[in-house]
Length: 512
Length: 117
Image (cartoon, rainbow over all chains, first blue to last red; front, side, top):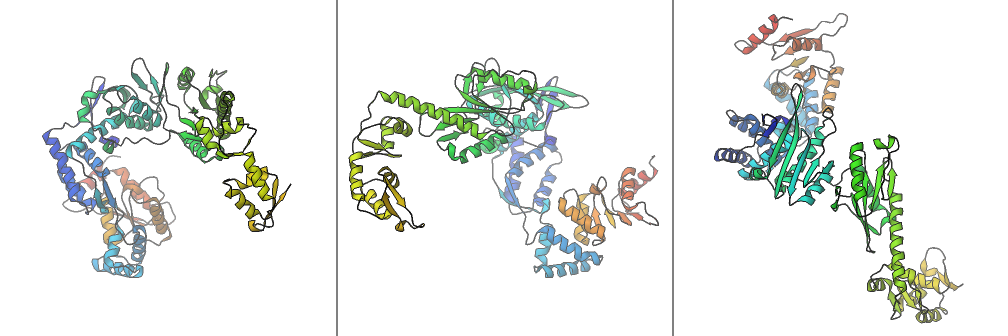
């Protein structure tokens, strides 16, 4: 993307065209020349590079050269070199110079020498530090090279993106890359709607007056993802404000692919992680919550196709142990029209999605707004109530466990051995540990938190413990039997631990 | 004293040469405030600036102004004058303009002088 003032376009009737640079010998030569300048000036001041390039500019298309330079500078790392902060250096020098008017070179040198002395640096270092933060003084430290063809294709893509800044909306059709496109649309927080066939309408700002370039920027960011598809067409409405704003069509399709860069490395196609602060906040709170530790929350959304269009829920929850997962969608503040379309899609969903809806949505204030949703709903203001989400998930969890227990009633769980980890049983019958604990009732076994233990073995342990007083010793006896849960066993066998202070070696056991 | 110039490059050239605090549109906000503050209290006796001080910024008063590269604009000239001439009992302010012989500056100054209001 380029600064808007570097945009070059042509208009013809109601169409607008970005002035793409052709990949001919002359332009490739220019690109190579520019790249070489940066390549050869590593370690030099930016002002030297600018001076040289400005000599090249006359006779060439000024905006074109500036655009190419803008892109090349993005591949540069500039650093300022100074011993002391330039602002501090200047302050010291200006203060010292203020009392004695400087009218010649010797007077100047005297002031500099005095200040350098006070700051304890050399005159050369002081002179160097003094203006080191000026843009012209920064030094080119690194330049990430690219070839002339890449530069021109990157420029063309950037030019088209810059034109999209002024877009109020566009209709696209793509082949082969749809999930990536929908995901990107979602990531960039764009409003969209699937039209008949494979067309997708991406909504622009609601009114021309309020046209915000921020929204246009999101449309622009989508372009690199679109051009990566096998085949694509786009038709965007572009508002050009002259005396009266006028709408032009920017139409482009995959026949132009050879003019446009398609590599992520150059096209800056990096989607942000979250759509909104609400979602981000929810995610961080959720993963930090102990009550939610059974659930994995997945941000990478699945694309779900419905009769009313595509739905990409914000989150997916997957239970870490049980084979259950569910989706979560946060509906924020948008226009009534948008909400209605969104609700239509949610109603058409073949699966259950938990929906959180902002209570402050404009449409709620309208009389008797009917959500008509068959989905579980949480209403929120400002922040998604995490407790409600966790309660909802706990319910699903409980229902799933109950179902497993029901299923298991017919099956007799076979137990072999004295000590059996519940994990193993759960795996053998492919149910959750919780379900195992709930439904396992065997006359010969005791069920602990993580283990199932034979009653005879426990009796043997109990017999040994009768003669033991010290807690640490009791623990050792239990652990030697192969039981990893001595405290649970002690309690089960009717012993209590009597603590004397915090030292476990002083604690004793007693039979209740 | 406030020195006015037309271009940033000249501001910095003067600042470097004569070690006079410079204010342009690229001067960091805090540094700009600090310079103006020091000018107000008299710690700095002189500053050099381009167009940035002409509008909207409250500049402490000065009794001498020097225009190093004038423009043909009467409005700009008045603004610069306004920077040093504040209503105050018994105040005397002087505005100098340097017009170099044999340069376009002569024509520019003349154009402004005879331009209709």
